[in-house]
Image 1: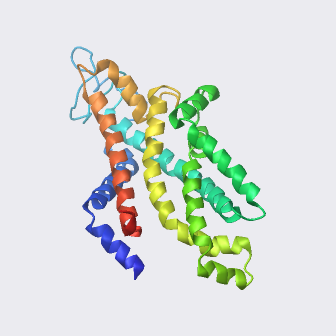
Image 2: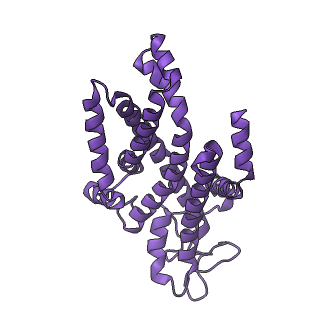
Image 3: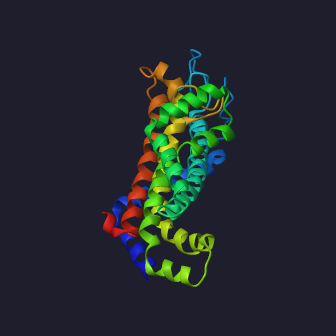
Length: 288
């Protein structure tokens, strides 16, 4: 019954519906990349990609969004860039959520007990992490690592973004720890691990889903910033941030080279943020 009420609240939320629609569009756009354009995103097309003067063509029958300065199909690069951005957003968020949830559960459960030193150490680590400017930290790591692979990028983004999640999950655990059903589980002899997995974890999933949804948008922005500053995935990999960086030199003559990737970043961030707000209102209307 509670789930049905949450679903009804979500359906009535126009912002949530818009956000969900944008997210579905982005996912389909990424999955259907080979169908949207048959051109390789990293190869130049010197035949249909040049006009009579030898300059890159704008939108045409062969290249719906034109080509970039290196005669590469813009639509193909946008679609394959969506794959990179969504993969980074989802996987880095999953990694961050796993670490943050584990730390939050452990910290909240040990707070005020004989193991409270664990809580104190973990929370001081969280304080240090939250005090560091996130994008500056990620950029510094990107520069230090040099050539960055997708795996390295996922690890860097995922393992430097869990601090806020851990603090929120800890706060939720502290609220739940003294409730009757937890005391009953203790009285029945359930282990701490069993209580955490069977009783605490299901009750923190709602806030965790909301945090993770908005977190995807933050990961997409972080990856785009790194690519724009040329400390992300190396060329010729198609990413929205690198497309912005490469297109800015021709923005006066061909603004679509900047508008297209910038618009995709905007739509993705807007979509995931609206979806996260809708889930928050649906799962916990008292948080409005």
